[in-house]
Amino acid sequence: PRPIEVLNNALADTAEHRKRVKVKDAVVHWFKWDLRIRDNRALSQASEMAQRAGVPLIGLYIVSPQDFEAHLTAPIRVDFMLRTLHVLREDLAKLGIPLWVETAEKRRDAAGRVVELMEEWGANHLFANLEYEVDELRREAKLARMFAERGLALHVAHDTCVVPPGPLRSGTGRPYAVYTPWFRSWIRYIQENLDLLELSEAPKPNPTTVKKTHGKLFDCPIPDAPEGKRLTDEEKKTFRPLWPAGEQEAMKRLDKFCEENVGQYGKNRNTPSIPGTSNLSAHFACGTLSARTAVRTARDRNNTKRLDGGNEGIQTWISEVAWRDFYKHVLVHWPYVCMNKPFKPEYSNIEWSYNQEHFEAWTQGRTGYPIVDAAMRQLHGMGWMHNRCRMIVASFLSKDLLLDWRMGERFFMEHLIDGDFASNNGGWGFAASVGVDPQPYFRIFNPLLQSEKFDPDGEYIRKWVPELKGVKGKAIHDPHGRGAEVLAKKAGYPKPIVEHRGARERALAAYKRGIESG
Ligand code: FAD
Image (cartoon, rainbow, N blue to C red; front, side):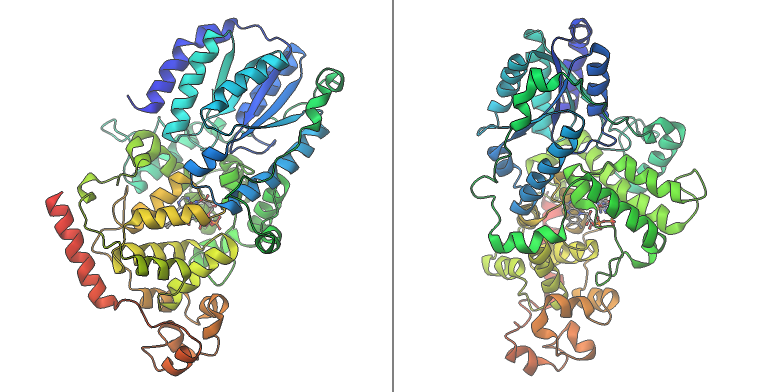
């Protein structure tokens, strides 16, 4: 059975027990990647129970260095999360709700530690929002049974997606593996179940007595990033002003985007030199913004109540936020994608090149293809990369360099502030043609044409590859091939590490061989 079924069985088996557990001295919400107060399903339910029973609500967060390792969480993402915890702790404290931050060195210690803390606090109901990766679903299934054995109750909520994984099925009753019909069904389902867009109520303030009963919980320190996941001082100086943390910042960014840019999103979203996209992915990934709030806010700017009507920019943006749901649904239906396997098993036999020099040139932004190099340097410079460029560099790695797409997938996770397994795996699968609803393998981006089309004046390249600033006109896309070789050489800018036409032929042959032998 798939992990979601294991969890659903565990929840069904323990449902009666949950109803019987009488609320004791406190109710706990376990924060994970849902670090917000506003529109948080499980937090809202936890608050409701606490209010009804007249007991305090306690927030819990568990820092697990081993979890960061396992998920390849980038230091910039860890830093963003820890900064968010500081904001969240303050916001919760205003409601009289403490946030207890616990460190569990080993992943497997987390569940045991939760139980110990609950016993210490006299709490017997724990609420949490679901995460859909395999390990997380298995952990929750175990926890549900373990709780039942100890007279505790675990309540989980679907929160991260607008439509929870499960109900969307094709005519044959199967989950969708193609985005377009899935999206039509997603829209239809929301229109028929408008409560999916109802925002959850904010938690109510704790009883004032909480300071007496649980006062020491308010003094909990928030740890520094663990070894190996720390930013340097220089990086902190660069990244922190770029990415202010906390849900108020997310809302500010969302409102500003909806005010100024969403209308033009369809037109501008593919131009990396302009701020045409929302830049909200770090907040979605950290859970400082819910997808529901985002979709609802965008929809409310339209004169229609429908998601598929009104301004085209708004519709397109909503359809992009929907991709996030799509890839999370894929994880649930085909959990083997969490295990380093391509969605399409017939793509398992491609002979990748594993050329380390090529990989290093790619990671460092020194491939000799300015658009690729600009994008990789943007990743280092911001911890973020424009979506069009993500597609370009992913295609370049897997096709032009014939490097195993998993090397790129991993590198992205290790460097992105918005690193999210489902979206990253989906994006890499798309670009490398091995994923769900991918680009066909014989469609290979020409990096020069992509550059000319999406960065026609070379503005993006000049920003991120400053040594090419002096290159005039179209030569910016290919300085060595278009007469700017002297300047490029003087600036130390490398020649292309592969020749696109030959690389394309090599990729086509390798993919074909791999599929035929698969
Ligand atoms: P906007 O264009 O404003 O879109 C709004 C939101 O919709 C995004 O914040 C994001 O949550 C969601 N979204 C948009 N496009 C996609 C998409 N194609 N797939 C899934 N969700 C989408 N996105 C991540 O959040 N984390 C990742 O680790 C990640 N890795 C990627 C790897 C590759 C190879 C590719 C091609 C794409 C990847 N994406 C990833 C998707 C996309 O590039 C980013 O979500 C987007 O660039 C974030 O910028 P934005 O917030 O300005 O997006």
